[in-house]
Every structure is written in structure tokens, then in C-alpha cells.
Length: 441
Image 1 (cartoon, rainbow, N blue to C red):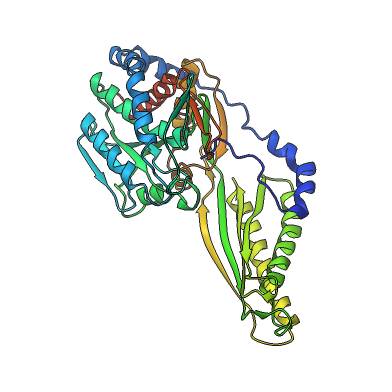
Image 2 (spheres, helix red, strand yellow; image 1 turned 60 degrees about the vertical axis):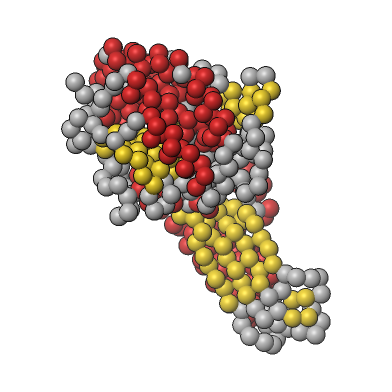
């Protein structure tokens, strides 16, 4: 996950147009100033005045060495896409050892730990994702240089996982009981083509049941609150034909020709649409492939594309432009051929992240803002693509917040993390969680 998505790379045909005409829209895209209500500030002040909470806040600081030790331990357990089982097993073992009412792994590989509340009238989720973007075989050994730790996935989102563990331990040691049930969760499939499969499962019939509030830990920045879901549609589009010799079979329909047309038609129409006023929308032809040799007519040509917007209507509209372009290109290439069978096309959706937003004045967002203000950070509301997209799209109050410290180079082999007041991230998560779950008497 990346805190706040900026403009996505666009096809060459439209890059200059979009950047020159629309980049300011993206650069300046921020939420309107939202005032933190006195009611919610008072609620956080009341929570922080509780002796058990005061103890918990200090214990978070005292446990910094253990938190960092856990960070190294979990980071060095590979968790490639669709193969999170080893890290999941260790996370389940660690969270069970801390003491909860029950721990289980669901059908999507998520690890869930239930800590029952005094009345159980509500259920709050505190979550971080277990997967990374790095393929099997990637060296995930943590290297320390000065105060900086380097390793793939160390911040995104292993830091979030360790924060979940520390927060649970702190609540147990401080004897902090909640009114609501709390589910501490490590999810699978947040990254890339995982397509949020873990959190989708939580909100399916196979999930744990009704969830009343959702707090995700992803990224490290303190003060940023993701309360809007940046939706995305992703497709793999494949044109197929008989293929043949470039000279001897000349006249066959060529899948590359069709793919080129499809890209052109989509880019031209999407370019016009993206520049219209309204919620920003982006599109990207990301990967292309096909063909076997320079003297062969290819038997297939494919591309993977991505489009994004916080508006489900705008996202659907630019998606429809793609569908029209694909069909138009197919018809034109088939009409142009001199011999052989028609081309066919397969349009396969490989990613579907829904859009949505939470009202900035909703209790969850207000509690998060008030908590951050209390800790000395200036709250900033933003939109991004995170696990919170799913509950947000279903009308469930949900946010994603940072887990503390500083980090950089996400999704790269040089990803790094510095524990610069990292305890603040865990403290803010504790305050938001207690505000949502209530402190039992």
C-alpha cells in the first residue's frame, strides 16, 4: 500500500497532455479543512486521563526494544504474494502467546484473534496485512546501517503487524478491558493482484460476522488518515489468432494490430474524459506481451491495464471506454484480414477495488483526528487504495492510519525503516481503538 496515490504513468500518446493539463489537479488534491469537534476532543482527553491508559501509553514506549525485535523477526519470514502461510503461522503463534480468547485462520489465510469485550455489542477490527509485493526467493534479511533498517517489506506492512502485537500486549499488561469485542487481524492479499482478497473474505459470508468499525495500520506516517477509498479496475486483455509465417501466411489477422488499435482508441477517448471536470481519474497500460519471433505473425497479443478513481461512477465510465475500444479494434482487424480465421479477444478482470468515502465528521474519523492532535500531529485527510476500501464501500466506518516511525522506498529492495518516535503510531492506534471500542468499567 502507498499512502495517497499520485498521478499514474500514462501511455506515451497522452502523457504530455495529462501532465500539462491535469497534474495540478492531482498535486493540489486534498480534503477540505475539517474542524475537530470539541465533543471528540473531550472524548480523547477523557480516555487519556484514565490511569490504565496512562500506564498503557508508557508501556508502549517501554516495549520499543521488543517491538523492534519482532519487526526484524517477522520481516525475515518471507511472505510473497499468495504464499503468506509461513509468516501467518508465526504471527498466529505470537499473538496466541500474548493472550486472547481465540485465534484462528480463515479460508483466505487471514489470522484472526478475538479479545472479547464486556458487553460485545460491537465488534472492532484492528488490522495490518501480512503479504509483501516481493516474489519467492527475494532476500529479506534485515541489514542495519546506523539507525536505519533495510529490508524488502520492513515498513509495508511488517511494521503494521508488529504494532498490532505490541498494542495487544500493552492492553493485556495494563488490564485495559473494552466494552466491544476487538478482532486483531493479519490479512492476506492486500498487495497487487492479491486484490484485497483477505479483507474481502472478512466481509463475506465466510467472515467472522458483523463488523462495526475498521482500523487498518499501513504505512508509517503519523497524522495521515485515509478515509476515502481509491478504487481501481485492472484487466488482462488478450487477442488471439492462428498465427503463422510473416511471409507465407501474410494476410492473417494480426493480434498485435488489434492491440495497438485498442490502446490508441482507449487512450484518445480516456484522455478527453480524464480532463473533464470532476473527481480525478487515471488510466495506465502497464504491461504488454506476445509474439515469438520477428518473422512470425503472433498467435496472441496481450496487455494489462489499470484505471483508478475515488468516484465509482467515473471509474465505471473510463472502464466502459476500454470495453468499447477493445471491441472496435477487434472488429476492424477482422474486417481487414485477407485470409484465415477471425481473431478472438478475452477480457479478464484481474483487480477490482471499490471506491467510497467516510464522512470526515463521522465519529471514527473525528476520533482519529482528535487522537493525532493530542499526540502533537496535524491531522490530514486523504484518499488511497488500502484494505479499508472494502469496508468503506460497504458503508462500514473505516480508516487506515500509519504505524509510526519513518520509512521510504516502499516496494523496492532498498525499502528502509527508522524508529523515529515509532511509539507514537502505536499510541494513536490505541487511542482510536479505545474511542471506538469503549473502556469497560
